[in-house]
Length: 195
Picture 1: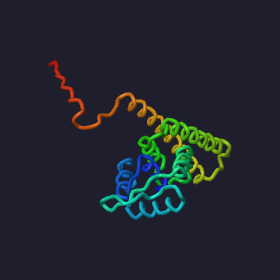
Picture 2 (picture 1 turned 120 degrees about the vertical axis):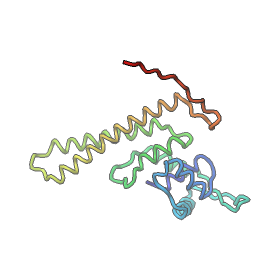
Picture 3 (picture 1 turned 45 degrees about the vertical axis):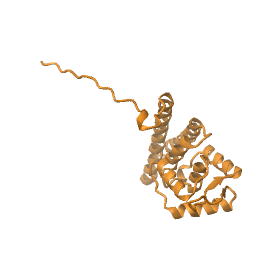
Picture 4 (picture 1 turned 180 degrees about the vertical axis):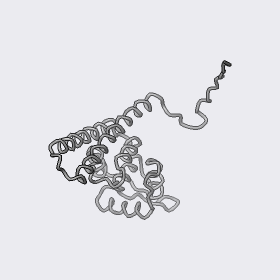
């Protein structure tokens, strides 16, 4: 996972300082990849050096918020538009990417899902072609690795289908804004027949 892109996605929501970014990152990703504050500030320094974020004046509490620049927005857009390469994924970057896409203003999440589905289907076709092209004397270790790649790609396509269905359900039923606005649970009577 690119911490850099995760922080840029969070800053697209508005200016934040380091501890806010860390908390928002963990909240957006379901704490699947906790960040330490040192990683956040080191990454912010690099982003500033590269012209992707700029620091704002310190607030009354002494924290220095950062905001994303136009170059940062362009870099983030390229990241969201580029499918994740399976060989570059030590952590589940795709799951984190979709979690951040849902909460980042201006990102078409359905397009992110479709772009990834297309890339994954291409990879699946290539793996299947490699498997059918080979002869029965293929090394067992290579065949098992190839099978693993096929199974992972198939699972990813099924998961992307699930994500797409979840997005449709989510847009149909708006989420309550607070605990007080949640509807009370319905109570129904259950009757049992004696046999």
